[in-house]
Amino acid sequence: MSGRAVVLLSGGLDSATVLALARREGLECHALSLDYGQRHHAELDAARAVAGSLGAVEHRIMRLDMGGFAGSALTDASVAVPETPSQGIPVTYVPARNTIMLSLALGWAEVLDADSIHIGVNALDYSGYPDCRPAFVQAFQSLADVATKRAVDGHPIRIAAPLIDLTKAQIVRLGMDLGVDYGLTVSCYQASVSGLACGRCDSCRLRRQGFEQAGLADPTRYSP
Amino acid sequence: MSGRAVVLLSGGLDSATVLALARREGLECHALSLDYGQRHHAELDAARAVAGSLGAVEHRIMRLDMGGFAGSALTDASVAVPETPSQGIPVTYVPARNTIMLSLALGWAEVLDADSIHIGVNALDYSGYPDCRPAFVQAFQSLADVATKRAVDGHPIRIAAPLIDLTKAQIVRLGMDLGVDYGLTVSCYQASVSGLACGRCDSCRLRRQGFEQAGLADPTRYSP
Image (cartoon, rainbow over all chains, first blue to last red; front, side, top):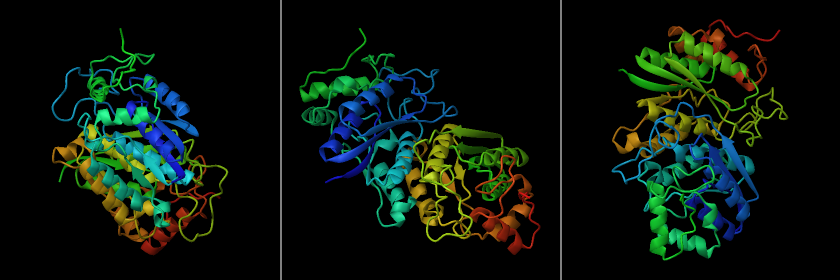
């Protein structure tokens, strides 16, 4: 398989694995990150490093002024990042984030004449966000099937979510096989400016468990 | 009916009519415009004037750096706006524009705890864009039904497209009945800085026909 792909790259563990998978399929990968005013800018630095190390042909950071989108611990400094697992949808949920990111990717994919969009959503070891479920991915595919000029021309853009039913341990093992340097990635919801992880938030907890359950050394750089 | 709504406001004739309709329904309207680097900034000035005149409780302009999204005559100064009707999807199509705008509206609606999003797409007298068709609106509704925290909680956000099957003449008549001042709106794809319309592009042509067929005076300010 070959072709052109847009890969959503957050700088975290999952999306790095997705990029490595797409590269193994021989795809020409155009990486896209969104700067939506996230508190942890280290994420975008990590995305840049990951794109370079895995051979994306380009990496674009799109800036979106979401000043009005308060209400998430990931964008609003007045909301604390929780350090214990929560019930239901947690305060780190950014409203419609994956919908917005896939929409921007859809526009870019159409301009690039790309065949597919790759996203690292995962329905097992995740934080309970509504836009990480298979039903969400399927609904976005149905939307892409009617929303674009390519779709009207009979070539809809495929939404690929290759990690959707993998555990974090399976993702880590897969990525290690593909040569992903997870030391470059940042998953922490409150990473330091230089990308050191807190080791306590929900995202750190899931990531740490992944390495433990995979029986692999955790290359994450934690705050002392 | 009452409640809270996000209304997508482009500054053109259709979205102004949609805002007036939502206001007549007694909705508390939060108007949203997107500054995606469109050539005709007069559109955003018009949106501001329309939001004020029709009683939106607020008007927000979200800035999105779509530098990579070249390829449309509406964002790329090197592509000429055509002045004769085209076959198929015209060069004024902005890739995935309505998908992106509805996604941003969805995020904001969730933050506001709004019940509905209102968009002025219209499948009859339109320019042939894929994201102005009923199938597109239905697909976005299906996405909204799974994508958000509100949906998970059993209160999905409704996508309202009240103009979808109206002719331009019907839209104009409806808006006049509702007291819309169409002199404030700008539809032209290549309006001047002060909002004067060219009178020749596809959008001007459809708009002019609308007033003619409605038998109403056209308040559009055309370039001399």
